[in-house]
Each structure stands twice: as C-alpha cells, then as structure tokens.
Length: 589
Image 1: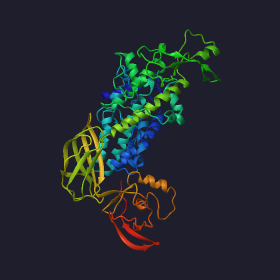
Image 2: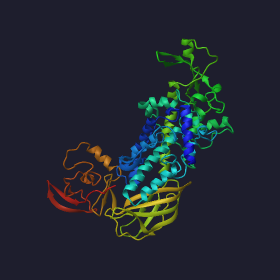
Image 3: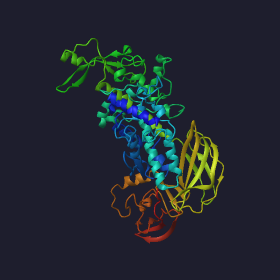
Image 4: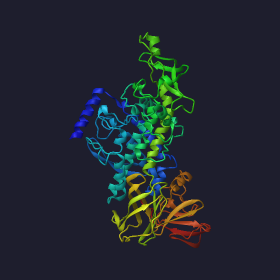
C-alpha cells in the first residue's frame, strides 16, 4: 500500500513538472541499438553467442529462439524471439514498462546517480540507479512493475536451469535475457550528463540529440569501445560508481576520472555539462574558468520562420580530466544566445553559456564508447562463471572443474538431468557443497545414475553460492554425456553413441557461409539433420550420398573414421570406395 501511495505521488510530481521522455534517458531506440550491438558482437574476449553455445546448450547462440511470457497492460501473452531481441526488449522496457499506460514514469526516476553526493533523483522520490539495480528479488514490483534487478536476473537464470517444466524454463530464460537488457540500460544511462548531475531538463538535452542521430549512433563508437578494467569489481554497481571521484579532493580526484577503472557516472559527471548545471557550484568540474575559448565554429540556427548558419564561439576542454587525448573537445558554447542578440536585439546582460549540436557531437564521440564498453562489461560480469565436468556414461561419478578466470566458487553444485517424460529432475545423490578455486577441479563425486534419462543423456550442472565477491551467484553447464568430441582437419564435431549429433560451436555458421544458397542434394540445408554431417563439422569432406529420409551418409574411402556409429566398409558406390555412417535425428536444444 505504501509503495502504491509513493507511486501516486511520483506520477503527480512528474505531471506537474511536465517532464517528457528526454528528461529521463537516452531514447528507447538508442538503448535498443546499443543492446543489439553488444549482444551480437564480442567485447573484451567475451562473446555471448559463444558462451551460450558452449555452456548453456544454445546451439544458435544469440539467435536461438526462446519462448517467453510477457505481461502487458491487460493480458499476459507468449512471444517467441531470438535471445538478442529479448535483450533489446529489456533496453526498451526499462523506460517503457509493458504495464504502464503512461510511459517514461515510475522506473525512469530511478535511473539517476550523482557520484559526488552518492544519491539519486530524490526530489521526485526516486532512488539511485545503483540501489535500484541491486534491489532484492521482486522489490522492483511496485504498482504492477516487473522486477529486473541483478538478483532477479540471477534468480531467472537459476529457475531456467533447474525448473521441472520446459515451458517454465523457457519463460525464465527469456526473463533473464530481458533482465540483462534492463541492467545494461542502467549502465548506459550513467553516460548521460543529466543523469550523473541530477538535472531534470526537457529542452535541448544531449539524450534528445542522440536520439536524432539514430543512423549514426554506432559510428561514434568507431569500433573502439572503452572497457571497464577495475581490478576488483565489488559488485555490478562498480560499472556506475567506484567511489573514487568525490568532494574530498576534487582537484586531485578529477584526474582519476579519465581512467578505465572509474565508474561511468564519475567520468560523465566530472567532464560534461547538462543544461542546468553549467554554472552550478555543486559540481566543481568541469569549470569554465579553467577552460580556454576557441575560434568560432560553424553552427546552424533553426527557428520557426528561419534557418541560418553562422559562426559560434565555444569553450574547449583541454585540462582537468578528459582532454580527448590532448586534442580537446567542445564543452559549451560561450554565448548560446549570441545569434539572437544580433538578429533580434535581445537585451540581456552578460553572456549565457549553452549546449548545442556541435557540443553534443563531441560529447557522443567520448560518451558512446564508454556506454557500449561498460554495459558490455556488465554482460561479461554476469556470465564470468564457467564450469565443466567429466562423466563417463553409466559411471555414477563426475569430476567438476571451475573454469572461471579469476573467481573461486564456494557453494552448492547440483546435478540435474532431462527425464524421458520431458521433465528436468535432480539426480539422486547429485548435490555437493564444495570450494573450488579458479582453474581447480574436484575429486571424483559419486551419484546414482538415473534410469529414466531421455535419449539425449543430457545432464545439467548448476552452481549456486559465492562467486568471487558475489554471494548467491548462479553458473550452469549443459552437456550430453554421450557426446564424443573430436577434431578433423581443424573442424570440431560431436557424434554420439546413441546415434544423434549436434553442431559443434561455430560449425553451423561455417556451413551457412560455405553453402548460403546450396541446391546440391548432397548438402540439403544447414538446418537439416543431414547437414550435421555434410561437411567439415563431421569429417572435413562433403559426403558422396546423403539420404535424408533414412539418415544415412556415405563418405569417400580413405576419410572414414571409426567413431560413434560409423563403421568402415569397402563398398563401391558412385565410382568411389565409401564407408557408411548411420545416425538418428539431431538433438533438440
């Protein structure tokens, strides 16, 4: 009840101040563009596509279709879309919740963080984005909000790995990917000056200008994202604020803000203006008195009845923090109203510094690379845990390895399996409390082999516990114990003794590259069962015969390998000696 009363007052305040969407964030389209770019590309030696493929059984990586349930204003519905689109959805709906008839209210007031005061937009009853992103499970559910904090997103991953029902697991996977999109949105908002300086302003702001540059947003990154490189990430809020830039010694601390171990809000607040904080003494930097002026630069003024280009004078920032590698960048127009003074005889004492499109473009070239790099870093941080385990078929024991680069794991490791009735179940005797340092392996761990496992022999190992500094972290590994992994001429393939097979990482992409529009009956399509064996992912060669109906593939003599269900023979067929391999249909992800 108290939360709903607070929400009511929040709405009233927002309507009184008549604040539109540009007051609160980069546009939702901007967040979608950034999230899509990050999800589909690798950054800092991390590829979400490869991680999902190698660890969670997503054979198509970020293009894997996931069916999720989403709640609208009236009804809950199902949507089936690729992983990267769920992440884009999170970027969109952090500003425009599906439940809200009036967008840009409620969640958006919690997207501000002032690193100097360590606070959020309290004047509109908001909380800091660093608090908002770390609220406990379900605590963001105010007035029909869905909850997508860091801990909610961890919980979605746990449910996605362990829940009995396939449909419920899929729903939780979609919620997890949406949650990541929501969290990335919060990091990206820390690159907006008004968000890092608590400035609710709705005319001529940076975020509105970026929205108008939709087709150019990624070009400001220039394929060189600025990656966060803190030695120790205490928790995900470090991407926003590391508590290094503060009031204690601003002259010294401002020089820290150019480093890559500094929070994004610290960098933004210390080096960039928002409209109403150019002369605000609460923010010691940037400081116009320390800034040099430049010769005038061409600017186009657009009014209702006119459009005219003229030269405008600017302040160039080349000291005290960011200097654009010594080249400087436009910080503010010296007199925003100089054109109107000349043309309309505007009588106003003194000069009025201001921000315009020339300034915003210089801002974007410095802020967008950090928005991309830091939010990509949060995605990597979420998936930094990595597991592997070895299990011989019907052996009743496994050995677990912590493959994480830096972080130890101290908690509960539980083994699940997919049963022949379609449910996911815990393995009897398959739960162990362990402490494994990075790179270390356990002793052999015994359990009771399930008798009702499905044909895929699929096991799922789930860790929940302390991962480095983070409590209640979740890490998963999906594997089929019948897989035998081999390499032939540089290509990996999986073949199973149960006459099934799956793509090895990257193989489907290779197939689609080699045969983008193939009409060769031997190849069929890269999505067919036959395609698993029709090129190097199986044996490094194209087979002589592919019979899709009987799932039989014949390979030329001399390339046959005695693996899985494959056996050599001396059959003369199609003018070559062949060997035959007979397999069943491909496994379902």
